[in-house]
Picture (cartoon, rainbow, N blue to C red):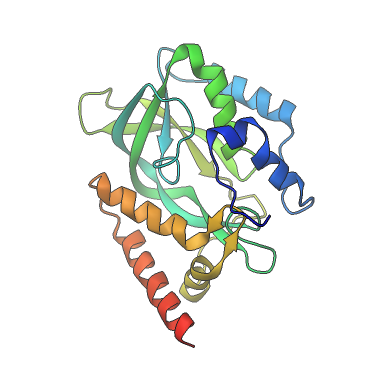
Length: 231
């Protein structure tokens, strides 16, 4: 693709993002439509609280949810942390230079926001969300406890997309050189890998969250890019 492809509500609904993945067969294991539809329904049926459905955003969902949201709540979860922990050769990477995407890994804590979805729009919006997050099998939809900064249901469960450590794209404990270089140089049809990191840091700051690890990583990526362009 010559022009950058944005993930948007429209591009998910009209199948542009799906077509992008299908145009490069064999690169990732795509989830069939019927499997995704069944997973959406199972997720709804297994929701701990049937009266309200909330989704946890910790990465690009923070600034680009692409779904209709009823309410937004600042919150954090315990037992997981955000991490660039799986390879992408489509969105923000290529076969020649794979990029790294973000998932939740076990251990630690993670700040983010919880989006509540109206009951009468739940099936439609979750289908859209799963077209985006569950295009392949790299995530496991997981119910986790969230702690809110106000009295909006402390301890309520939120749906989070947790990386599957058994997936062949999963990578953990990368050495710093590989991590920084990949984020600094990788680029794909939906943009530069580094922009994901920079946008994450920017929006976490706007929310008033501190993530020293991501801030330090962004600084290292910028320094690498500066030195790389001078060579």
